[in-house]
Each structure stands twice: as C-alpha cells, then as structure tokens.
Image: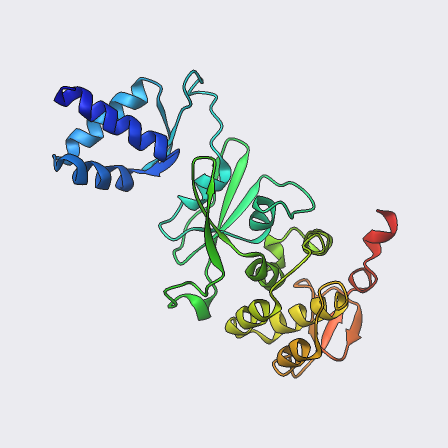
Length: 275
C-alpha cells in the first residue's frame, strides 16, 4: 500500500470508530499517526466533506455519513452528539432516562451537564440544552460521580446513572419534563442502589433537594425497598422551614416530615387515575 492510500485508510478507520467527533480529536489522532502539519489533516477533512463522507454539525464538530447515505439527509445520533458538545459533556436528566429506556415520554430535548457556559444548540429536530454542573460539584474531578460510559451506535456515550438521574431530576425538575413525567419515568425503574442515591443527594448541599428525594423514596417505600436508615439519613438534612416542592410555588399540603409543601396531584399521583 503506497503512502497516499495508507493515509486514506487511516482516515477511513478513524471515521469507522468515531461516528461523531471533534476537530481536536481528529487532529490528535492524525498527529500521533504521521506527525504532519495540521493543515494536512484539515485538507483531509475538507476532502471528505466535499466527497459527502462527512457532515459538519457545527464548527469543530463532524459526523460520518454511512455508506450509500445522502449527507444532506443524514440523521446524527443525538446521544453521541450531546456527548461531544463539550469536552466534559454528560447526558443527563430526562435525556439520561430516555437513553436508558426509562422515560415515560419521548422528547427531542437533550440536556447535558458541563462545567462550562454554553449556548443551546439545535440540529434538525433536536435541541441540546447545556446545564452547568451544580456549584458544589464543579471542582470535583469526577463531577460528583454517578457517570458511566456506554457503547452506543458505534461510539461512546457519557451518561448519568439511574441513581444520579433520580436525584438530578428532583434537584432541577425543569429538565425532567414536569412532575408527572418525572414520577412516571422513575416509577418504571425496578431497582436503585439507595446508598448511591443518598450519597449523591447529600453532595449537592441542598436541603430542598434532600427533602424532594426523601419524599419520593418514602412515597415508594415498598416498591423500592426503602429502609428507615435511608430516610433518617436524609431527614437529618431536610429544611428547617417549610419549602415548596414545585419551583413555581404551587400550593399543596405540608408534609411535615420533610417540611415540604407538595401539590395534591403529586401526593395522590392523580395521573394514575386516568392511566
């Protein structure tokens, strides 16, 4: 194989292993492979873009086009795309539930966690929403833990675990799709590592979040095999004064054990009556 064909084959091999990739990733692999000027790699990208083998999703971000597909109509996997929107991007909230097959409803809105400030981004029908990591976690090298990598669609997706996702959607319900969607989605999960749930909830240093998590676990005590020790470890960090479950301060009934004002529809899970 001559040098030119060898270069082409290395590029094809890279595209096969990276269905979605950044400009920096391509440059780093090319530099390690032939130590040539970055202009060579840029020219190679331009060549494959012109040939319809790649699409530019946005500046510095590319996706491969399957053989025989039309580059103008190719649909980029949203989970892979979300993971590439920041160097530390992690699929989270409702998008994490959806990725793991636990979302009650399908959404085209994909939230991801990052330490960095970023703007919302649309690609075709999908909207990608950056959420800055909660302040207590920003200096943590592991971003608070509860993150895993999973093979998907030929690439890797970074996604929060179900345990972390439970806490995250209760901490920021605006990214969970509303209380009915949150409850129905979480209720489809048969098992949680409750020690992991509680450990992560306490890291957020939010009495309101602790109360929301405690209330949810207590309401599902039997199905999730919640023990007294789980609830007591949370109750010790619950609010000293009554707080609203809902960010919009929706009225409801005070659940004194958690100092939490819970809307009647959530207390009764009223949506289940019409399911």
